[in-house]
Amino acid sequence: MTAQFFGYIGRKTFRIKDTFADLFKEISGVYHLTRHTLYCSFIEPLRGKPIKWGSMWIQMEEVGVKSALIVFLTLFLIGVILAIQTAYQMSQFGAIEYVGALVGVAITRELGPLMAALVMAGRVGAAFTAELGTMKVSDEILALETMALDPVKFLIVPRFLALIVMLPCLTILGNLMGIFGGFLVGVTTLGIDPIIYMDRSIEALQVKDVFSGLFKSGMFALIIVMIGSYLAFVIEGGAEKVGQNTRSAVVTSMILIIISDMVFTAFFFFLE
Image 1: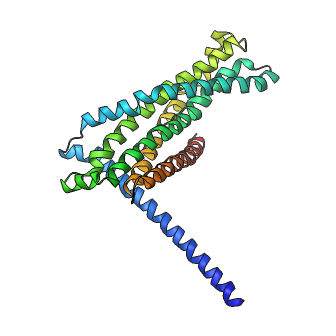
Image 2: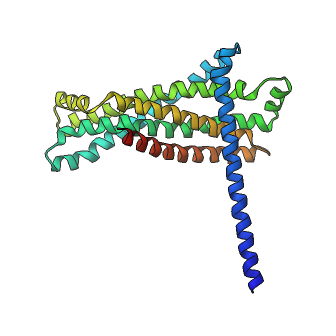
Image 3: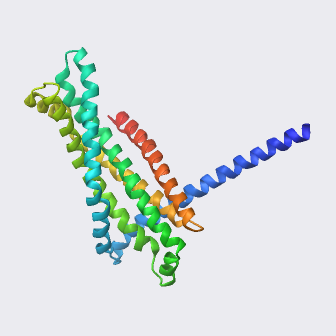
């Protein structure tokens, strides 16, 4: 009985050890891929190795223009919901005119960047993993390496630069849509004077709110591209593995986006 007990403890210990070893291996892989991508994006062009701008423009259209409608609709509805939910509590204190201020700050500082990133993680992150994963299992990436072409520079860098430009742009426009959604509800349903609503929103918003949201968007873009690309590059197997890693990329990206949002929110709070 004693031998079985200690044998069970030993097996569990080795399993935990293997789990942590796999975790650190994945973290190390993402770190090296991120470092290589940043080097190819910002250092190599300074050394006479230009970026393929044609591929970047194509990716900007794919990840930005074609994602605009769903991001705008999502944030518009978030603004509507936020205005309705906060109006009841604000009316208890006779401060319903401050609904616009709350909606503007909440969307600009937190909900705008976060919701835009989550939408992009589901749409763009999954597409990156599926596309690159299919290329991996069909040996197209191996063919690039055989031709002395860097797969990271050829495949990941255009996607990274496109998303790091377009996600902040979508966030800004999405913030405006969210604020407009709150304005629409406040004026038509809650009976708030339009001038007062806009005045309270402008008074509450600060430049640092906008810049903190844009900074978060840049970090979220980095997470989406790196997680999606890494899980595509480590695929071993066939189409089934592509589907599994695509699902894992979306879930992992969303979790890391929420965690990083919490970290950056705490950082900016204590910085103030």
